[in-house]
Length: 131
Image (tube, rainbow, N blue to C red; front, side):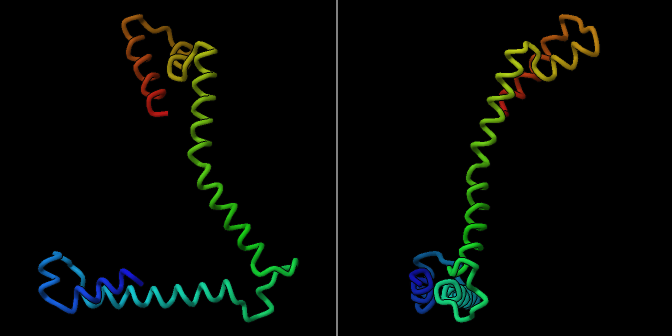
């Protein structure tokens, strides 16, 4: 609401448009207002149900849908943590075993000259860096 008010105020006076350097158009304001009105209607449908079909088996309004949305959000928030845990497991496992991924594959499949071992270890270090 506040942003719509500020945009409308800026659009009323050409001096404000020049002063602020705003690139707001009437169409932008109309789209904001439409989204605002649609949002209000959606919020009303969540908070004040008008049909019996919206009640779940426990008698609460949309509890199952809200729990499902909460689970999806929790999984999204935990993606970063899960990624760190997998990286830690990878690093601990490969360092403890003594065969990082690329070095292990190269040593198992070929007999590499020591002069090329530097390149293989460099690739392994990049995996650690970006993991």
